[in-house]
Each structure stands twice: as structure tokens, then as C-alpha cells.
Image 1 (tube, rainbow, N blue to C red):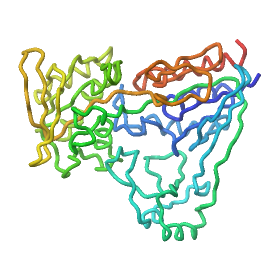
Image 2 (cartoon, rainbow, N blue to C red; image 1 turned 120 degrees about the vertical axis):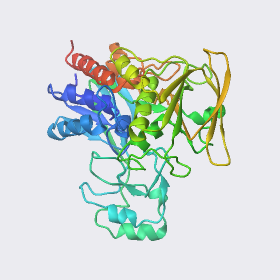
Image 3 (cartoon, rainbow, N blue to C red; image 1 turned 180 degrees about the vertical axis):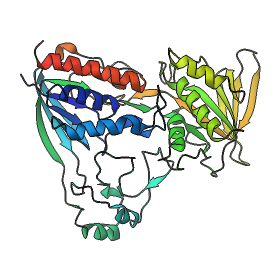
Length: 412
């Protein structure tokens, strides 16, 4: 029986699960498909319960990984196939080339010299990057990555002359033998372009809540200034639209748990940055469980934070200045209302990253894409791969999954 454990996904829950298992003596393989660890938490400005910046938790976790030889990290890596049974799984992993040397050489000057600008996925398209990049704050690993699909012949020549670039690097395949598997593949924002009535993807000043996090983050495209994407102006009147695609049989049928808290937090971002700005939250129900209720009451006590109980029916652009008209029905008064805002923020639901994706291993998913733990197979789901969770509960879920994986490989 193998004593090793595989963790699929290098976000907060995946890192937590890997460290919990490694620090009691088990060899852990951590497989992450993106170039850097950190997942969605890395993209936040602040997270609950203490409104910490991502560096608060992630930098500590990265240091723990660096100091623990039991954790072996593979980035740009994906699990291709899994065979075997609990205690003896054979896992095939494909690792994409990084095209850069395994060092912490600063390649920013070379990156800046490249000709093409590419939409930056880490910033949700709010900015661009070069084909050679390290676009996340306090990146782990501290190593640039090259996207060769977006370089021309002149750039290729320039890159080939650099000692830290290897344009001939190829995909690699490795085989791992593990006793248990933890699926910590996280979540993705629901594609709001499917919500044609809410204007996302078509109206420039209608953004999703993760874009709002990046605008508020000091490492983001505006260095922490909340500005309208269309013209860079500070918004003085902002609408937050709850349940954008959630609790809707045509989109996501479930409640994503954290959206209400995220919008309240972002209303506070706005009010802290612009003392005269107004925030209006359109909601069906405001769900602020447990300890978060005090935070909600504090935000809602602000006279410039207003609430409207009612589902938004339509969002339209004012072509004269890029402002956004919101049409909704106030469920408390029964009145239909239409109001103009400088910026609209859609609270999009948390869709599991595996939604619509075939699984290379024997684990079941529900109709929404969340993974069921298969304890008899030694396969366990952690964090938002299993259900919508905040960061604290994701860490708790990861610890639970790690404990179960340890029990599996120890035959208990």
C-alpha cells in the first residue's frame, strides 16, 4: 500500500490539505494546472473572517511548502488518467513546458520588450500582459512562464538569444503511485455573459464581483483604485446585484453562500475609498450566517449603503456617458423602479471548476459539477470542489480531507 497522497488543485484548500498530510510524514504530490499556486484567494483584495489580504495566509503557506521536502509541487500540470484502487493508485500526469529556466531570474525587462499585449486572465480581462509573464503577486514558484502562441518572429529571435529561455522545451509525462487522492479543484465565476438581461460582457461598466476584487486590490490593474473600466473615473453611485445567475433553474440552481457577504465587503471597499459614494444592494435574501451578521449590520448601518429587496430584471447602458440603468421591482413596496448608476457589480455564483469537465478518475459529481467524496475508493473532495465555501471553511474542509486520506493510506 502506497503511503503517498495526491492533491489535485493548488488553491488554498489544496495547499492546506497537502501541508496537513506532509507535516505528519506523508509524501504529497500537489498538482496544479496553472503556472502558480494560490488559486482564487490570490485574486482577492481581502477575505473573511478578518478581512486579510491574500498575503496574510498564502505567504505563510508558501514558506511551509518550501521548508517541507515531503511536498512535491507540479505546476502547469494536469492529471490525465488514474487506475487502481484505494492504497494503490497509478496516476499519469502531463506537465506543460514553462520555457524558462528553473531559477528566479528577473525577466521583466525582456517581457516588456515583447510586442504583443494579451488579455490578462488573472485580472479577468481588465488589463493586458505580455507573452512572458509572472502576473500574480508574491508568485510561487517565483519563475516566469512563456506563452509561445503569442509571439511573432522578431520576439522569437529575441527570446532565443536569452540564456534563461528554452523555446524547445516539450511536454513531460510522469507516473505517480499514491494511496489516496484529494480533489481540491476549486471554483470559477459563473459565466455572466449567459445572463443577457444583465449586460455583462456587453456593457463596459457592468462587471462581476471578482473583477471588483481586482479593481480594489493594490496589486490589481488600477493599483487599488476603484475606477470605471470605460473612462477611469471614480464611481460615485454603484449598484450591487445579488444572485446573478444563482438560485435560477436556468443557470445555477443553488445559493453560492458567500455572495451576499462579498457584496457587503465590496460596498465597504467603495465607502472606505470614496466617502461620498453611494452603494445600493439589490437582493432576494441577505444571507450573512453566524459571525458574519455583525459585519453585515455594521455595513448596513451606513446611511450611504442602501438595500432594495427585489430581483433585477434588466441592465442597460446609457450610450451618452457609459452609465448603467437598472430596472427592478421593489418587493416591499410593489413598485417598479429604474435608476442610473456609474457602475454595476454582479454577484456571480461559485461554479465548481469541474463543471462540464470529464473526470480522469473514479469520482462522482452532482448535476452542478460538485464532487462527492468516495471514501471506499480513498478519494476525497475538499473546499469548493465539494460545495460553495468561504476561505475559512475551505481550510477546515481541506483538513478533514487530509485526515481521511491519511487514514486510508495507513489502512485504518
